[in-house]
Image 1 (tube, rainbow, N blue to C red):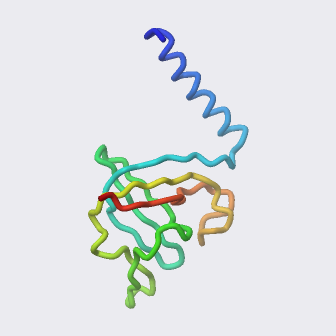
Image 2: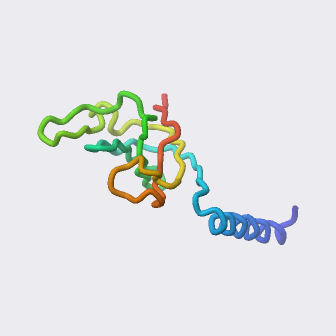
Image 3: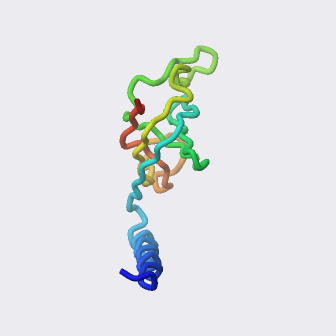
Length: 122
């Protein structure tokens, strides 16, 4: 492939993704992010916050995929990410998809980031 066709392929791919998103608004967009676990918790719905080395920050709802990573907080009635996990390196697989009434508050058609898999790095 020469240098002149590479930009047109990138543009073609971007247009294809945009077209699919418009035609299939409920389609999930998946991504993987390696970064630092910055925080998380919740009252009704648990979430994690991961930040990459480039500064990209993702807040994703656990929806049962985070494991035993949270401690209960008596004063708030909610949960907070365990202190021992804050600052740890993780790999987060997440998807942006319609809520479908999984999370309290946002409507069923609002798109949110959901954890598909999260693992501590060694």
